[in-house]
Amino acid sequence: MNTLTTKALIVLLSVFILLMVGSQIYYRLNDRHKTEEAVLCNINENVPFKGVVVRNEKVITSSVKGVYEYLYANGSKVASGSHIANVYPDEQSLIDKKNADNYSARAQALENAQNPGNSQYVQPDTLNGRIDSEYKKLMYSLISGDRSGYEASSDELFSKLNIYNVITNQSSSYTKEINELKSKSSELSKGESSVKTVSIEESGYFVSYCDGYETSLSPDNLERLSRSDVEAIISGSSKHEVPENAIGKVFDDYSCYIAAVLPKDKRISVGEYLNIRLGNSDNMYSVRVEHVGDPDEENRCVTVMTCNRLDSDIAQSRVLSFELVFDEYQGIKVPRDAIRFKNNNEKGVYVILGNEVTFKLIDVIYEGTDFVVSRNTSDAKHLLLYDQILLEAVSNQDGTDESDGSASDDPTGVSDDTGESEGDPV
Image (cartoon, rainbow, N blue to C red; front, side, top):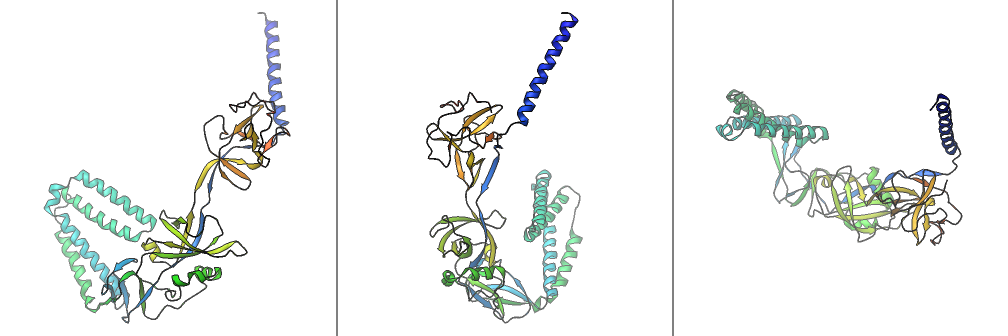
């Protein structure tokens, strides 16, 4: 092949490439079709709300003055005559008592650490793994603000570290440290003779606070509460005086009522069992809807639910943040005005693939106001993630979601049985 022929071929090839690139650029610049990319979406219809916790409650009073140290966690079951609190003359006396208990506990932990049985039956590698685990618990409690968990992990870590020191011969005896700790504990315990105790005559579930609603708010009058009543309690604008000398309250049943102002919703009806989540935690509770009031001008109504589960979170607060948990949907978002019908009422959309238009099926799992959610699938007959959805009609014969649903003639050459298309140029 001579040089002239080679040059001619190069020129022709260059012209061909320029024409191809130019045609693509022209096509892109003059594409007037409106499209929308198929993207993944999550639909969460959960309803956040604040609820008022209501029970039949009885106020506990005491004439003993001082700083109270409660011996039961909120929500604990107590029997009649139970010793529920120690009362100290002042706050420093209580601090001294807690420090004395801490010194005593540390001394006991050191005595256990140098027990000969530990060096015989505990292996260093095993104990080292337990130390790492306890350290992680300690850090988690510190980050999450769990004070009781932090203190428990701190004690366990102290004990295991000292056992490890003994069995690895880093320490042979803690006698000096034990004696010092016991001496400090004894010194701080001298004032314990002035400590008084408080017992209660009632039995039930005990909570160490009162807010004044114990007598005015009961399950018997919940259905008479208005929206303004509930919202006043939640906002704190409605104040009730706490009874004099009140030190806590008891209730005889672990179930409770939750009153809230919720939107009118057919899913929230009397007799329905729903799931609620407490705040931002993972704690889930099953509730039964007992009452739904008449909706107001904002289509919201007072709703009363019962919950048959008791824990410290619910026991110790009057107002809590909840979330009604409904189904969650994940799929491909499809504009409602892009939906077309084809053949035997097959519901789908037209998508642009290169220069061609293809009909693809959709499997609707959720319907919104101006969109639907189609199941995310790898089936090529169905709409796939990142497909370019055509928003305009391919021809005036297309069926739409608002039409009578009759099958339309196929203006694009789409195959009836596969959903694949020969394709019309766009």
